[in-house]
Image (cartoon, rainbow, N blue to C red; front, side, top):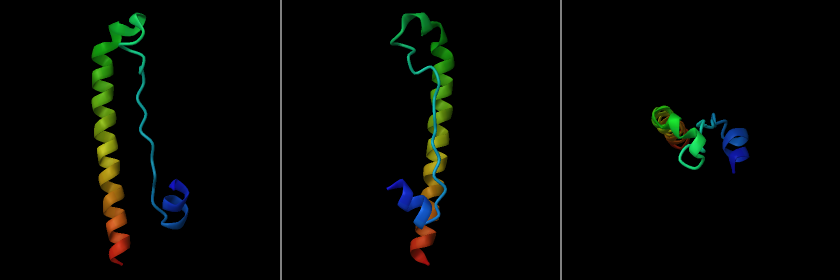
Length: 64
């Protein structure tokens, strides 16, 4: 599906990653819990921004 969106429709697909995903699972990483909350918040905001941009691009393309 991603090939259709990027190759055929020429949409800019992006991935959002977050570090320290083992905090809360690995007790040795629990000291990073505050940092992980900040990183997760930033990643979620970035994903929402990219999603909105993709929706606008798709709607513009379908309207044309």
